[in-house]
Amino acid sequence: MTSLLIHELFGGDFLKTPLPAGDHFYNRIEGKRYDFTASQFDEPIAYMDVPASRADAALGATNDELAELRAAFEEHRTKSA
Image (tube, rainbow, N blue to C red; front, side):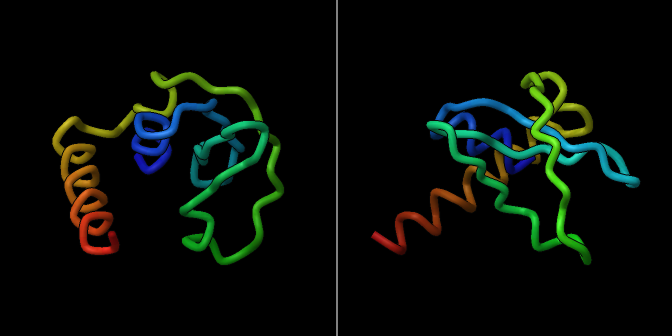
């Protein structure tokens, strides 16, 4: 879901890497890989950078969850400004 919000805010491309628990999604913006959720994994990710679509990344995410993440991000960004 984080990759959806990052794409919404900053554009770029969706990428994925297959992992034992399922596909892991992240972003590429201006040629650089951004994975803001990599720390959730116990071991480093061997990135494959497989191109993915928004529809792929959105599987399992709800509009309500994305709205909650967006609101939390905006609240944090406002406090940091």
